[in-house]
Amino acid sequence: MVHAYDCIDEWRARRARAQSMLLALDFDGTLAPIVPQPDQATLLPGARRAIQRLLDRADTRIAIVSGRALADARERVGLEGVYYAGNHGLEIEGPDVERIHPEALEATHAVAECRAALQREFAAEPEVLVEDKHLSLSVHFRLMADETREAGIRARVERCCGGRSGLRLTEGKKVVEVRPDVEWDKGRATNFLVATLLDSRDAPVIYIGDDRTDEDAFAALRGRGDGVLVAPFRVEQSAASAYVRSPDEVVALLERLADT
Image (spheres, rainbow, N blue to C red):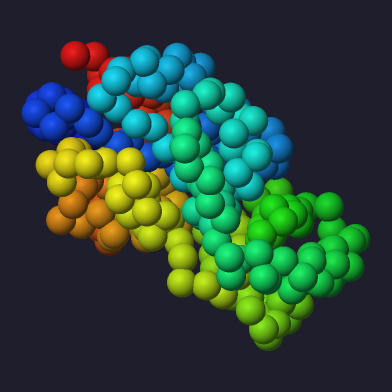
């Protein structure tokens, strides 16, 4: 795995030849530092300017592919012309694109029942946050000081939601996700964006993310594009082909990609 800065010249040259590029970005841990409570997350200084510079190019499309609800991601980025994929791509919206996964809509009743069960389960534990994203739920425990309790939190989420028809559980950094049990993830969402937005097979596709769920996108792009992992330390197992060490390096990468 090479540092992404070493790939910039190649990516820009391929963009110049194809006259198009798709740059897909996770939000938390990629464009915004990880914070204890999800509602505290904000774009890094300089990130909005860098994205706007890329949007101003006629040859570059930008997508935000996040586990957050689409409306939440759109509000935090706050830029027109971006393609927003929320709930790990179950909902996608942007210029001339509007899609909600039909099977995910069918599961909203089960998600609501699970939300009520989780809120009862963790009512007396303010360090466990149940985030309602309509199409899915996130149970955050980053505020929990005692890491030995984390396995117990996961087990309780499993007890509340694991056996419910139409739902499945996935894990990320200090979070358990309750999602519709459909064959869809960030990888499939990214492939949908590639097929929808790019005409040229030669156009570069870059996906930048930091979490386990971003590995689906890295794997999906193998042979077609490049995954860039955001990680402060060397990671032995990842489907990404390049890395940066921090969200600050992501912003610097975006600025360089905005240059001719």
